[in-house]
Picture 1 (cartoon, rainbow, N blue to C red):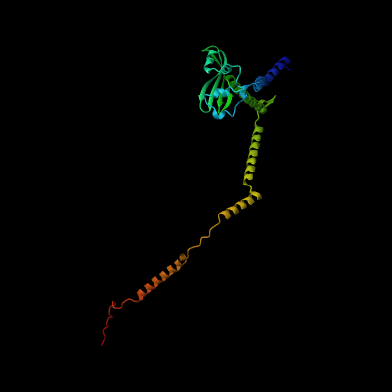
Picture 2: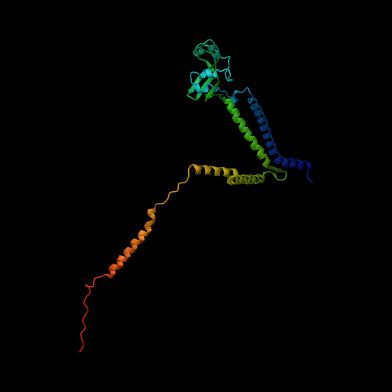
Length: 290
């Protein structure tokens, strides 16, 4: 019979061979799911109206006359959501001073950073601590009169990671549908269903293409034929066909040719008949036998 403890230990070892990979896969799936949920939460938080990365602004009245001298006035419009009216630019503007006085103030300010006429302007938002100490906060670029906020490095990495995680989730979900398990066989992959699905998809695509080709090859409708006939009739009235008669002199050419040929034949016959006889040798005289 054997010891029951040994049987239980062997059965536990036999089960652990098949259970461990499944537990490992489930753990990976749980970790990925929790990570995806946190990333989705962050993305939804970033999709709020307060996030300036998702909006743009423009004023169509200013776009034709934009140039490096008035682009800051265009950016400081009251309807521009990217412009903070508590900045030092507003103080200088209200005091009617030159923008060079911004370096003497401390606090939030905007400056024209880069110009590429006539389409690109870059404006920087920065915090000035002193005349030489400045901390950049954000960059805004104007392309063809439309203002956008340039994304920071954290936003770019966040977007790339979210797309990567989304594709990974789809890959793991699809891979899970192909895995099979049986206590006596273990784990294996089964892709027969996918092959049949691929064939079905290809057949559907080919049927759609054939239906589109048939639709293209269909004859025109009665309305189209009627309209074409009307257009052709109008063209025939505007540009009638002119009947050009053939010249009458060309009709006698074959008769003249035949008469010339006949005359040449007659002349040849006459020349043959009227040969002179003086050139013939005299007849020979035969001796008489006595």
